[in-house]
Amino acid sequence: MIQTISEKEAHLKDLVVKLLQERNLSDFDMLDSLFAEIKQELRNQQKNID
View (cartoon, rainbow, N blue to C red):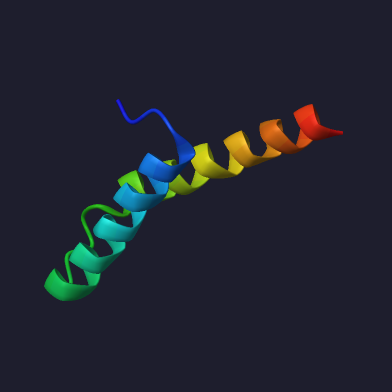
């Protein structure tokens, strides 16, 4: 499992590039999941800062 936000961002970037290159739409569930995870982690970090 991917641990850090930067690792998730890198995986997300790779996935988007792959989807664009292959026009493969079957990985969109994974894409949505990664966006949701990153969004939640960023919210949690912001709460910890406040």
